[in-house]
Length: 109
Image (cartoon, rainbow, N blue to C red; front, side, top):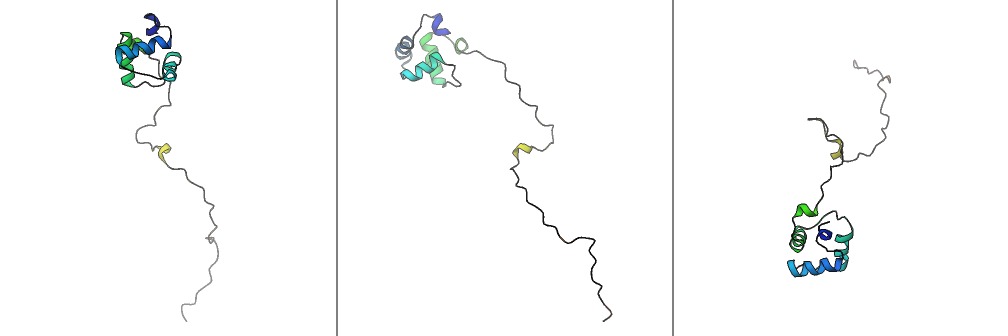
């Protein structure tokens, strides 16, 4: 970590540097989360403050990982079935049978 390479071993030391060099005041909880955990996101303003306090670049603070493989997209022209709303199945009521005999009509009346 960039902080350790610069002799910063505690959150208190990093908090002091952030205040002095970058004018950023972080709560102890926020600083602890940055110092001990791998955040899923960091505001650009905080990234800039960290870089100013530690005299480093964002590349010194970030490690890129290979993306997780995702399923292949559907072929061109295929409908996006994931975008369709779920359908509720409705039972069909039997209608008149097509084979039902119809009464003869006397047209000659």
